[in-house]
Image 1 (cartoon, rainbow, N blue to C red):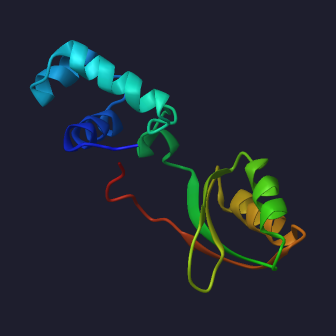
Image 2 (image 1 turned 180 degrees about the vertical axis):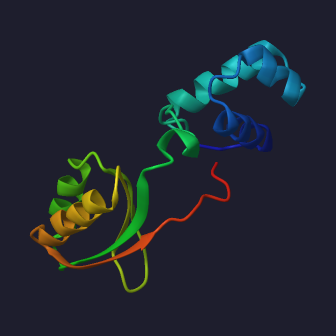
Length: 143
């Protein structure tokens, strides 16, 4: 699948506001509405756009604790650990990474006690060797 520079610009606008109207996006890109709609449909069909989601403003979860939880997994246990983490609603995202850790999870909980319990639950999973957490103080920007 080939992504053109116009596709990249379109994706950037959709990351900013996936609910923007086709007409608004077309105006900003200086393209016709039909062209924008066709590009969106093609990007969805080809799997470039995998779906749409909701980003919650920090103020809505101001009292929540967010943390990056770095996870070291025993060899050959990654698939089962990933599935167990997928079942935990407090784990908002999970990334496989290079370096001393195998996975980095974003955990979001209402308070410190719940974050402590979450990290304990993750550490207790079969196949998890070690976890290290870093509390997020603020988001400077997200896309």
